[in-house]
Image 1 (tube, rainbow, N blue to C red):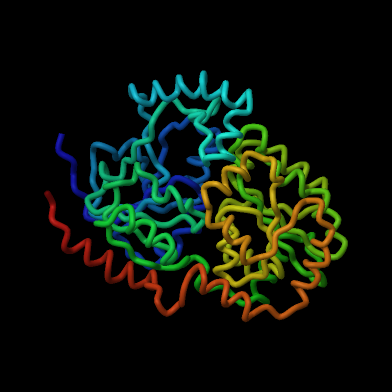
Image 2: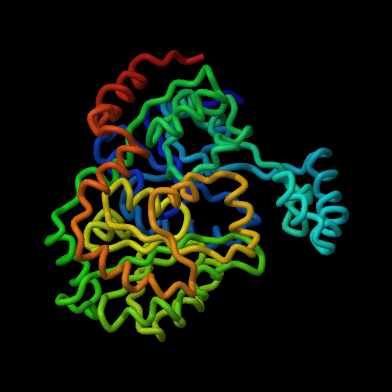
Length: 413
């Protein structure tokens, strides 16, 4: 069956938070825009409820479901964060799965996986009991003539980014900095890259205005106290999910007398265990779970960011916010894997202070960080990871010139 060519820009949405992430691009594009909601079924429990949330957030804006489009329409330009895939069981994926749940699981039980990970950098367990029976296949080429990858964070794995499954999937990569650009170019040498920074943080309201917005949203905020933003990542490891919150909760709770503690749990963590909300509220913290939260405002309103891992570490750096890092215990599988993979957010610990959950010096460092002028230090840190602002391509230019040109010049095959 011949697919119909739609002369529009389509944005493939997987997570509600992508609307905030893509807002600058969406605002810059004209009416030739349609949203495609990924309504595929996945085995990941974290994806529960996301489709309904996306429909609610889009309101009256034009959207279609991915299941209605795939194999039927192709859009002139497709923009995706590469988070959509189809799950295919193949001979190779089946054999790998059998190995993982037998030999790999045995390696885990006897401690061989940990030994191999520590000694040669790979556990050779195939994922163990958490291995998937399927392989992931991208769908962007099936619904887009020219495909553009929009970056979802600089917290990438230096050793493995971009993943091999993306080879040949995208014509153009929009990048946060020269770091992800160089990793892409070294692996996919024939791919065009455009460095755009992190546009959702480029035009923040003033600190005064941001604090006013946040204090209106959360009536428990005492405007005479500084705001600490605690923004933990999601840990997708059995037995360690939410551990980064639970081990730090007693220490963070003690700060409530002097500071407003606003915690924003990762949306995936809330999808896995909604009971954590009750625990955080009972601890007296101010919990932000709004799916349409403008994170630019939230960061700007904070006097200090407490992060651990993930994109929030680099987001704080991009916005030049004062930052302290909260470590996971060394014995956890999460941390061992992260160190071995050389995640960018793990490397930041070479430039920013980090603390163990029983390190009492955290309290003094919070006080000192808030009181001290760190503008020069924060500027240098941003330049290290994101370069000079003058070298970034503005997202309005990408929308008005680059994507506009694609709409007018791409040839239908």
